[in-house]
Picture 1 (tube, rainbow, N blue to C red):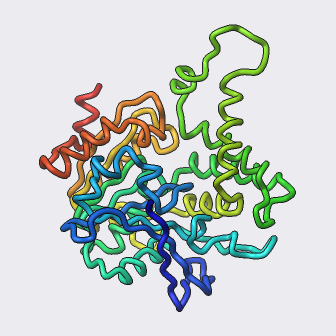
Picture 2 (tube, helix red, strand yellow):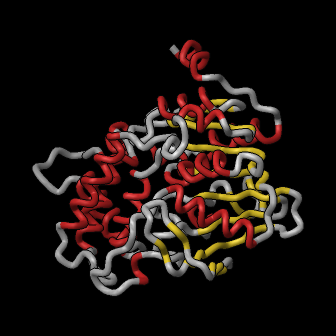
Picture 3 (cartoon, helix red, strand yellow):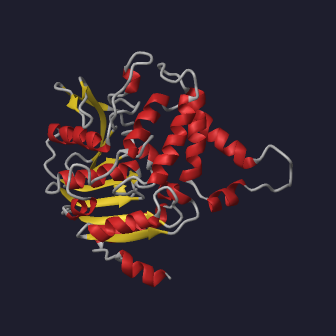
Length: 343
């Protein structure tokens, strides 16, 4: 079973906010064949960790699309998380953790890349917050990323996404134990329940949570979001959740550069952008925007009733898009063409 490795950077990390992490620790895992010709680097989503074969097992593992016998696969835990990298749970009760941005996360992982002596990343892949990292990285090190796969993500986190995250943070702050080591569990439970509304869709809830018998209370949909919240508090930290939703809000590839569009146009990697047609958190128009302005990009679409989380569910569709892109010179549709063909 794969375990974490740790990279300690002795000089800490200067943050975009002007503050500094005095200690930079990154938990990372390397899977697969160390002699493989191709290196795949996976950027994980908000609540993920470096054990990609556990949470993205539909794509990564023995006899999966990214087969461990064929690739060297690297996944690193983001700073601010609670899975081994420097994060809020390292601090004493009620001690504040600095603002972490997507740019900071990428800066830390570039230090890890150098430590591992990886000069080129053959395939950089990420979804959701992981996709935000991947697009930022492909801009920051445009000469080192050969192929880029961006799934259900964006170039600038939307007002809708920021509002959804703030609603979750309000739930966290309403818990009087928030800020204490291991505290804030009731607030985290509520925050996760709120998040599920944006991770799934109206149709997903209708299909899976409708009642078979009319009754006045105790509905399946209510039990479902309670269960998701209760399950989540066993594996995640309230302070890390607060930190990483703020990091997601910070995402804007144009900050510190001329414009968002010019930043995207600087990407040199051959790129596949994948959207989900029922995603309300990262709607398809955001992936169309990416594919419009990244020079060598194609757009693929997952058709699903499951919403944003379809990238963790619709493996057959996702694998087909990846197979065509990586092995068969996939030529998807540029957004303007795609709209015409699907009307």
